[in-house]
Image (cartoon, rainbow, N blue to C red; front, side, top):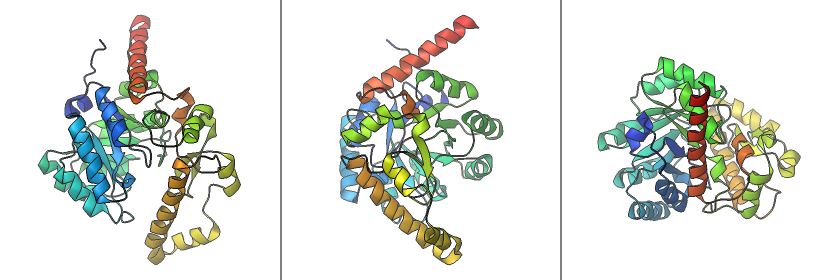
Length: 330
């Protein structure tokens, strides 16, 4: 039997291993979260994966009926998410164990959720923003580094984790730069209390995306990941398919012009977000490579399509193997 790993994250969530299966737009679903719980880790889902509150409630009910283990919901907290109020109310009603906030101020979420016993983890990309968030009293910071999938940061895993650990009093969870157990151990050695890992789970049996998307994660590698502003207006990592190469990765001159106008910027960003998410939605479920597929460089370590429990088990076994090897050479 594989031993448990004791960290601040495992204690906060009551999980066996300090791993969050990251929330992935149009990828994460209830089935994946349930299987993550069975594997001793915590799964999470973006609330925006559900078009209606009724669909969201159905998914939360399914998870709650299948497991009493911790799971999380990701909330986009900037003004582009016009459904935030509704999503937050539903999360509170269901007492979702933890919330991950992204792309905006987490203050409202922290103030409303923590009194209910719900944990709040906040995405941050640098120390300045981390200190602002820390003042709002979250339960942990998620250090989104420059190797993360989706909306990546700018700072290397080591520099970001060590900077936050040395300057902040709340636990730090690392997001990005982990495709195997050895890399997971490295992040914990830097001072993180856990990791958030997403891209390797895209190619899972339970993932709802197309077989072509999954096989792209198998067949492409780290060198094929590029940053684009086409999807949401905010830099986002995608697989550099022929289609991506043909349309480019930068906003056109008109989009850039609108973004420079302070009065129009908010609405332009909202429109770009909406258009980009529609494009990504089509890509996620389309049976063609002529689309945009979101992923991070950790697909380098994806060699086949496997169940969530098997992916998680490999990660944990590799972690313990790396720890064993380190102790032998020490």
